[in-house]
Amino acid sequence: MGMFDIERYLNVRSAHGASVGPDGDHLSFLMDTTGVPQVWTLSEPGAWPEQRTFFDDRVTFASWSPERPELIVGRDRGGDERETLYRLDVPTGGITDLTEHPDAKHWFGGWSPDGERFAFASNRRESAVFDVYVQDRTATGADAELVFEGDGWLSVDGWSPDGDRLLLTESHSSFDQDVYVLDVATGTRRHLTPHDGEVRHLSAEWGPDGEGVYLATDRDGDVLSLAHVDLATDDVAAVEAADDGTTPLDDDEWNVDGVAVDQESRRLVYSRNVDGYTELGVGELVAPGRLDHFPTPDLPPSVAGGVSFGPDGDRFALTVTRSDDTANVYVVDATTGVAERWTRASTAGIPRDTFVAPELVRYPSFDGLEIPAFFSLPATDTGHGETPVVVDVHGGPESQRRPSFGRVKQYLLSRGYAVFEPNVRGSTGYGRAYTHLDDVDKRMDSVADLKAGVEWLHDHPAVDPDRIAVMGASYGGFMTLAALTTYPDLWAAGVDVVGIANFVTFLENTGDWRRELREAEYGSLDEDRELLESISPINHVDDIAAPLFVLHGENDPRVPVSEAHRIVEGAREAGVPVRELVFEDEGHGFTKLENRIEAYSAVADFLDTHLGSGAESA
Image (tube, rainbow, N blue to C red):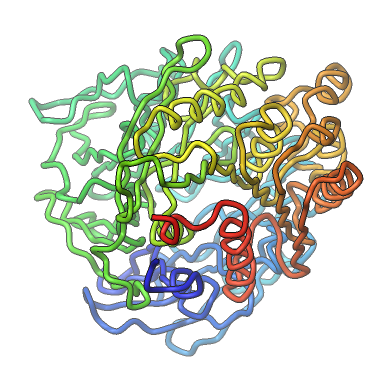
């Protein structure tokens, strides 16, 4: 049996969300030492950090001013995702509410180059649409200037180097975006990415001198590649390597999933998602759309992102996490690739060498499609069919399980459970065609991929086929419920966290601002209601044969808590052993430490009861 209880694992800390200060010597980041992420700062690697915010609720981001020792900080309340923006004066510790509209969402869009103004998108005028605002740094909510009225899901990607224009992205669905340039003074908007059908345009960044825009797009193929939009000609072209570097830009297998540009130094960092792991490319733009590469950063195999350049572009900070170590902030020398870890997020006294890294496997599904998965075996495994397995399904569905650190996962491994994390069809990271294999009427094909994964587990010499549980959050909660209702004989237990039980009521009750995007993935209430009813687990609850545990947050703006109540009520009426746990001060997931401890202690007890912990049976 593991030495440490679930509370100890949930006290493993995470340091992420770095921002480099205007002097280049100070770094801010978010860390959850107090139980929820707050702003901390550091002035040198490994130094003792200083806590700067003291909210009861989580801080969602922090961004340094380019000119002053101050940050703009985002915070919501009880997981409601309605971000309020604050200005934090670092020398005095003073915090000012900038937006003063607690019932609206505010998506930060960056500081102006002179640090006098900032931009954001908000649905304060109408809940289902986002407008663009500009505000002086010392002004308050009533003084924000509405510079563009939107009619959909708009976000702001940053200011042009001259401070006259804003870069905007409008999302029509998870696989279809458009990028615009907005003239702040006139409110006129220029469309940069006209296209037919669904095309992704992501991570848009201004190029040096404002001559163009860099972004990731799949307009010319199945995967996202790094492209340049020339503002003089409107031409969109793939970025070319201007050197004989080791990181080519003509990869046609893996997505470019992030771009960051430093204006003055002309340096660019892009990330490529290679089978879930991050590969970074770093270089200098020697001409528009031409990148001269520097050496690849010497980071461990990991998931990395959130790049923030220092003021002269010589260094950049980013978050690095891997399965066998918690998230920390590293600083990379742009020209040499030398990386240094700046933060030392605590592992709560648990030796790092006890954390388990997964094996990347692939298994065939019902139609021969190869499904990638991460499979982690506990140290207690004997290879004689005695190990229970938790099949952990990611949310999204436009998401991907990647080899990042998981506190609950490492606890389960310490208890003798194996953990199987499949990236079923519909997952991102494997090209556009793969992501569409579960759309609308093909939804249940992804559930069949879970069945195929269990069949693969049955053939594995380590696995006890009678002790396999399924667990997932959000869309992964739907997958859990769908697996339990569609293939009831495969499972010994199921854990549904903030999951969808009924697609019709989910779409009717989810936030106005999200409904259109969700219908693009799942099907529309007007045209696909019969299909949505047929695949909703609530309508097949009688088929569940395994004990079920349902957890939810009362303030969930994405999947309303009514989804939890419905599935629990239906399961009870069907005679299924079911438990429900709802947190009044949480939203779509659990962010507060005391709630996470209560939730996952209960999950661990539930699994031990119905599977028997692997450590005890080995």
